[in-house]
Length: 182
Image (cartoon, rainbow, N blue to C red; front, side, top):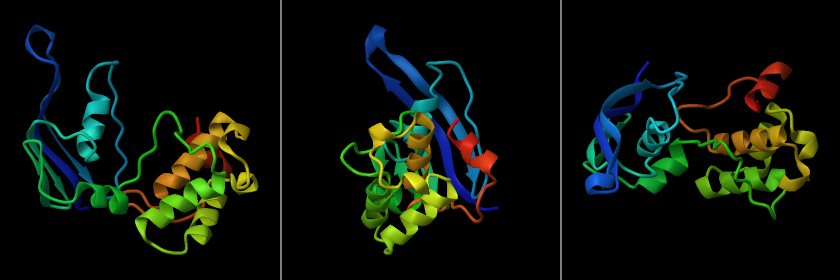
């Protein structure tokens, strides 16, 4: 497997002086393309900060992040178009689904396809909703969906542009789709 993302000596501090909190302190790790990685740790240990640094959302002030072998952030300075990298290669699923309230489940996924410029947004959105077993709810607005259904629509949205590190290849068994939302 090739490396998808590599972090080298990341350091991120929130606040200053006596109120300073070091969220990341010399963190280095490599995520292989196609691998599944779980970040575990107590509240306040820097898990979200690390995800934001690796996802080009909030860079660390020290250290480097490489994407597919090329440097994209060094000491908090972008060396590439981070928005474009996020749009074309990464998919995020947040703890809260963060679906757009005035769009249906289908439209929430379809708009992610359109923003990424991959084409055939409606077709891809329907495939993903079927893959995650929520296609029967495609015309429902987020407030009409259960928490688990909202989470599966959010997963479909994250996969909309076939992110390079997490693209589905075959339909999951029913227990997998249900477990994805748990």
